[in-house]
Structure formats: structure tokens, C-alpha cells
Length: 134
Image (cartoon, rainbow, N blue to C red):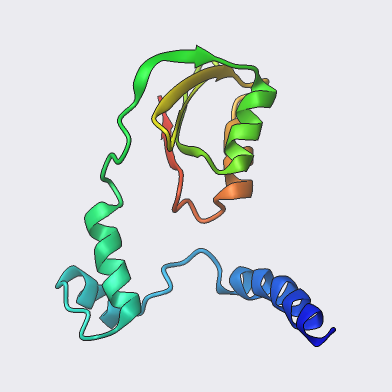
């Protein structure tokens, strides 16, 4: 019973703590300088931040094949599943999605900006999904 209570508390407290931290860079000025200088000095967080800088723009899965047309509801499901790594919004309401597997999908949003509302649910700090507007 205690384990269930502890797990339940952790799951409910964690989002509050994360929300309180906001979407600002969690590193201090000195920590950010250490990352730029690639000097982790034994700090595991700085080590991971340096590794992230090296790989964050790496294209780990190249887009494959022609884009597959999907419905708006299917696009929302892909976003909410966390499989989308890049979302591109065009002025004509068309959307292009590239997933972590490298597949490309196209759809059309009902209103301009709807895509960003969905992306914000999964990635409120804009860290995991690359957003492009054309």
C-alpha cells in the first residue's frame, strides 16, 4: 500500500514541479558557459547537456519515401503519441509531419495554428519537436 501511495504521489507531484520550473533553460549562466566550453567537470547534467548540443540537430532518421496523406485526426494521434519530430505548417493550412521513424505525412488543419496547439500539449517547452512555418 505504501508503494502505491508513494508512486501515486510521485506521479502527481512531478508535473507540478516541472510546471513550476517553467520552460526556461534550467541551467545557470555558468552552467551554460560550461556546456559551450564542453567542460562537464564530472557533472552528469552538464555531460548530458553537452551531448545534447552535439546531437540535437542530428538527423537520426532521414525522411523516407513520398509523404503519405492522412486525416487531421490521424495527425493529432501521431503528435500525441510522441512520434513526430518535425512539424511544418504552410500558409494554405497544409501540414507536413516527419516522425522519428523517418516517415513523412501530410494533412490539412482546420484552422491556421491548430497544429501548434497540439504540439504544445506534447512539447510545451519546444524542445522535442522542431516547428517550421512556411
